Amino acid sequence: MHFHVADAYLDTGSVLHRLDSRVKVVITVLLILLIGLTPMGAFGAYVGFFALMMIGAVLARVDPWLVVRRSMVALPFAAAAVTLVFTVPGRTLATLPVAGLSISEAGLIRFVSILFKSMISVQAAVLLMLTTHFTDMLWALGALRVPRVLVAIISFMYRYIFVLVDEAMRLSRARDSRSAVLAGQPERGQSVLFRARTTGRMIGNLFLRSLERSERVYQAMLSRGYRGELRQLSPPSLSGQDVLVGLIAVGVGMALTGISLLLR
Image 1: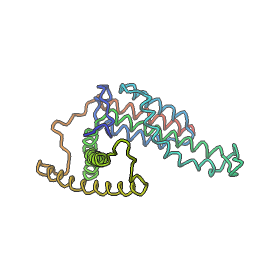
Image 2: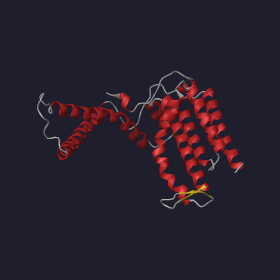
Image 3: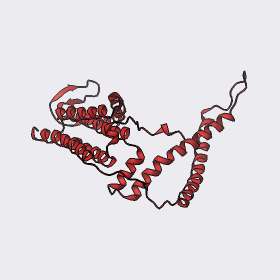
């Protein structure tokens, strides 16, 4: 199993790692909600939320630059809002000579705000992933009364994506072992059409093997007592320290959002 493919958990034994997983999930969801409610152009609040994420990274004993770097995954999606720069009415800052489009001040502020809010929200999710094991997150979702079907789907997606990756790697090794070329001999059958046909056959084979493997795995799970939910032998108890940390984090976020709304 190649668990490094999707598991981002880093066990540093920090305070955030020992925090109850239910509290961390609630903190993350509420902070993302508060970031979304922050008005456009409230850059002081954005700086405050960013500082809160960096403090979390320091408390978690992880590299803050790692959190920032992984949050850049939001850039391509946030860049889809670049049209706001040209469509939102407001004071014109510049005009593109080729296309004749005008860059408005209000549109630029809105676009930059969306960019910052997206990245900071992803940073909150990254901190959750770095400090909470995925199985603990699934248990926390179940404890927070998230629908069992949704939790089960997420659980299967996480657990068996590694099985799917292993099946794909076996197919790739089998293809490479049957595509050897003697030294000094020219390669044949390497046209685009040949590669496309080979890739299509591998995808179909992967689908069939995955379907058969899923049936065997599901029957094995049923024979071991699976009844549609995750069970934990010794679920952790919620302590006063966990609640206090959660109240402080959410309180700081509410203060930032509230001040930005009052100063709007």
